[in-house]
Amino acid sequence: MSHKILWRVLAASVLVALLALGGAGLWFRQQGKEVFRLNSDLIADGYYMAGFEFKLLGIVHHLDNGRYLTALTTLTRLRDQLESREGLTKIPEAASPEEEARFFRALQDPQTGAFIDPTFPFSSYNEPTENVVGHLAALARESGGPLTLDHPLRYLDEIAEPEALRSFLDEVSIIGWLGNRFPETTYVFARSLASVLNGESAIRENQLYDFSPAYLEALRDWFHDTQDPETGYWGPRSRRDGSLARVDLNNTASVIKIFLDRNGQDRVPEQPLRYRDRMVATTLELIDRPLPEGAGLDAWHDWNISTTKGIRMLLRHLWAGASPEQRARARQILSAHVEVKFARFHVPESGGFSLYPEIGTASLDGTATMILGNLGAFSAERQARLWGAAEETAQDLGRLRTERLAPGDLAEIAEAREVNSLRVYTTPPEGDGLLSEPGWVIYPQPTPVMDAAELVPRVLSWLRSDAPALGNWTSRARLLEEYGALPAGDPARLPLPEGAAVLNEALQGAGQLTIIGFDVLQVPVARLDITLPDPA
Image (tube, rainbow, N blue to C red; front, side, top):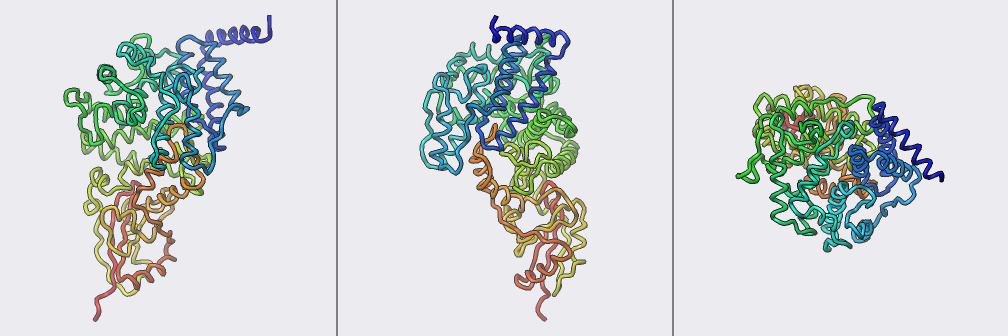
């Protein structure tokens, strides 16, 4: 017997023993933690790793369907490759949009058309392909050229007919006890297809595949029929009895977009969203989860991604149906979440955010999980829709007339309830000028939460200099489109009380100052106007 055959026999025997002891899931999760660490290191070193998470879920798919030896050998092969870095490719640095696009197009598999190693399960093909196509679309917009692929997306032909589609969706959405032991489940592969209905499919948007009306109708009907009536959520179902196997916040936040637009209105009136009140209640419970302490990268990854998506779902799609009591509770939860993100995930040296707490390295995926934009910090219109207009939310502290500003003159606004930061303007701001026009930012008390007016230019600087081209599910080009369009200035930070001298000089030059206090959600909560006395 050859060494290779002997190894397979021994590996299979060991795995059978592990299964008998109920330890296979634990062993795979331990291996998963190690490959998550290796993946994080490789992204930091500039390697292309966009398909990593979906390769792992493909391995879980093998495991949960009884293909134990295939799962074991595939995970071992993946771990060995990440350790040796053999066959991995670095994303070119300082490349033009055209050069970068050529690099990514070359990663496409010529047979399947997918942007992933074809030795992994078919179920894992779509999501990394959507991600790379989305990045190529952003590069095309930047260069002004067309979006093209080297090969057709043949893998989608496998599920082009409604019957084949429903069979695939049923397969990846039904899980056993092993599949339910991991932070994420193969339901991701069902949710990935939902993007062609919710406006987020780069493949459909750029007309790279012709989805038939029958396909789209079957896809919508399947998600409509599989919504859970108790929680209002979507997610994997138990192979044992068909019940909801877990309350799946991460995937529900994507599926809901099939049925509701960003204003909470039904996309298809003939097929309205059901169970809205239960969805709000369920979402508030789930986004109130604390960051798991002492956990591995996989658990931190799940917390960060799913909580962020849940918050966005609540604010975009469910807010209109939330009661005043639910909105008040949400504000408390969101304030605590922002404080945790700045205290544990923000990397001040670069300006961006990490995906995992306190690792000291910003990433594209981590930066994409910051929710300030969803809270209205970057848009006066969105902020007013969520919390009320600035003149309604900010306590008016009146007008101070003085020839010379003393440090004590700022005490009332600095100590106002919920004030996290102060923005100082030389002209009274309106609308998005709240973000773009402050000359200075003051922090009355020590706080981990950076004012948005100071944060945005720092994130932009990082994106334009040191950020990699592509993360696991977002890209530098996409984030540059978002942050580059913001009406942001570059205010200086002033300490108190030393900064009073600078403000005095500004007061003498402009004749007036407006100081607005913001809470950690970047909502205006207090306002003080300062002017020179009228001439005698």
